[in-house]
Length: 205
Image 1 (cartoon, rainbow, N blue to C red):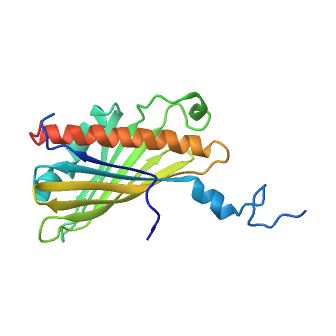
Image 2 (cartoon, rainbow, N blue to C red):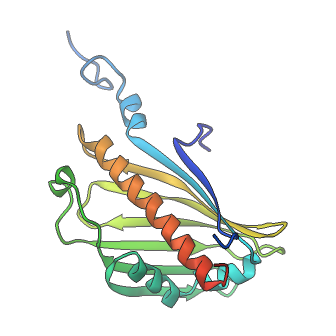
Image 3 (cartoon, helix red, strand yellow):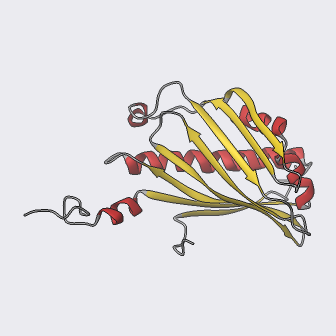
């Protein structure tokens, strides 16, 4: 378990209507593992809803609804790759889209102009109160960046909260930090817009 505090976090309430170098060193004498650690950015976002976890999960675990979110966020040619429900109640949803993100100049040299993004959610069975844990990931074909981590639905006194945590990591030197920052900003923006869209579908706006 990572005990370091996240570099970027936010809480959103959507219920309101409104010589010789050693092998493990890099130039400058810094250990390589410390350089790698600096190139990892973390995310922690919480989105609150005025609905029970069961109702929220029924919506967000729907493959067709996930395709609606993709289209709402500007994704193209959205496709439902997989939607499975295990006998014990676990759920897996996989979507694929062509990217709809406008890339900055430096990123165009690292990410193909036309590429696909595969997004996966794997949810464990519900607890007695409807809460669930799961994992999410987004795979950008041909891009030297990875992102993913745990996600959770928790019951609250007034409804539920959807928590996203995870890491955004680039596997390229020099420009890795810029690429991570761009990917992190895009991810946070998309998560917020997706949550607002979800709230509207739940009748909270």
